Length: 329
Image (tube, rainbow, N blue to C red; front, top):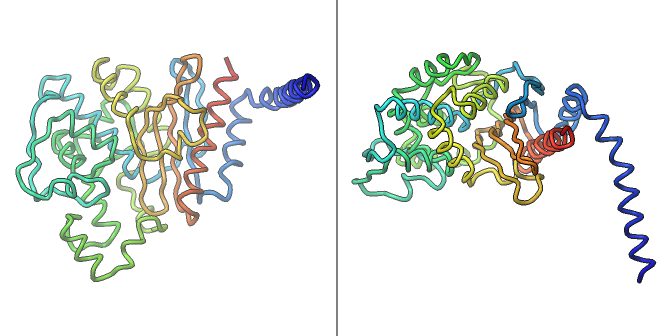
């Protein structure tokens, strides 16, 4: 028994010694960037990454200046604009907002499916909660209205000095364009379209090159990283609003296999996912065991692989950066 225990510790010690030099070699941006590209090979069509330690000045980027369709990650930009209005006293978090039936948008775990009858009112805070945590499309379009519309969201980004990031459409319009629907993506319009063409129901995870080529609602990973840093750093909103938004992002229920997928159990992650066709994304903040944090934006596109493979690519990137920043201390 004692001999077995001794052998066990010898094996562990040997493994530690063997691993340490490999990690040490990765303590520079170029090496970790190359590792990220290699990790994603065969799992996604193309990947874009940008990351930076909070309070640091070194940026890690892979295809950082290339534009990607944001899908639902653009909802963080909408929340940022709504909270800017809250900080200005133009809105309040406990303000009740009517959700009219004609604003219902198709989507999973949606307000539209949960409340089929008229007469819905939700607070601004709860609308943002389900927009981020459940990626609810109806809540998103209501919040877009509270923000002042897509042009107002883009204007707010420019106020923050963020370019290469544009918000152009409501989610009902994005879904209309993606599916080729005859009208806005209401539950009724979508149901009729899927009934007439059942194949549409499976296109949600299929690569759509026309959709990806459309420049609307696109951002670069580096531009998105700037938004994340502005939210956390207090330039996008007040400290109170930043804490509120990061709290919501920490409760996100989608994308368990993405940024979180390969991190140690219990690692705090505040994030927002996005998925449309061959596009799978995840953006947010990861906390290291010593309390340091880093912001990360991972975008993918043109993928013909399974959703599990795409999630794995994002998870591999997140873990590589987690190890890089943690061992860099």
